[in-house]
Figure 1 (cartoon, one colour):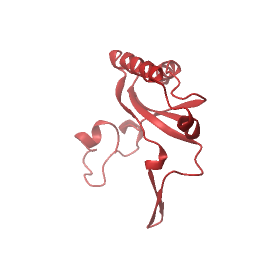
Figure 2 (cartoon, rainbow, N blue to C red):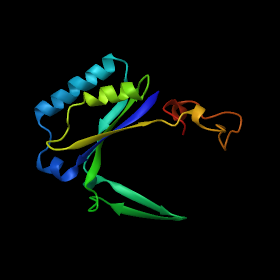
Figure 3 (cartoon, one colour):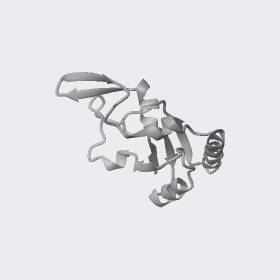
Figure 4 (cartoon, rainbow, N blue to C red):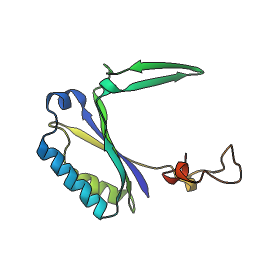
Length: 141
């Protein structure tokens, strides 16, 4: 089973107390363990919301909002994609994750939507089969 792992932190705390060299080393060691176990598929840290954009869709209209986002307190600081046997295994790995922030952080684990989850997995552009190649490699897209 593939899962997306989101790491959320209080962006102000992260700005006030950025991760130390020791925190980065602990995260590198943890990621090396995930790779060695065959769990780690992909992942990355994310830049602050000051460098982000949000696109709000309302019907056919699209509005672009430049970061930082004043209404945001907790933001996604990083993500990973894991291949695990089940949610219990994902939770066990997540419980071992070093805290990326000086204060509170949250890890959210969400399973990928898989082909088997869909009632009719056919693509609107190719009714005979789902997407293949790079687009279909990481999930139903």
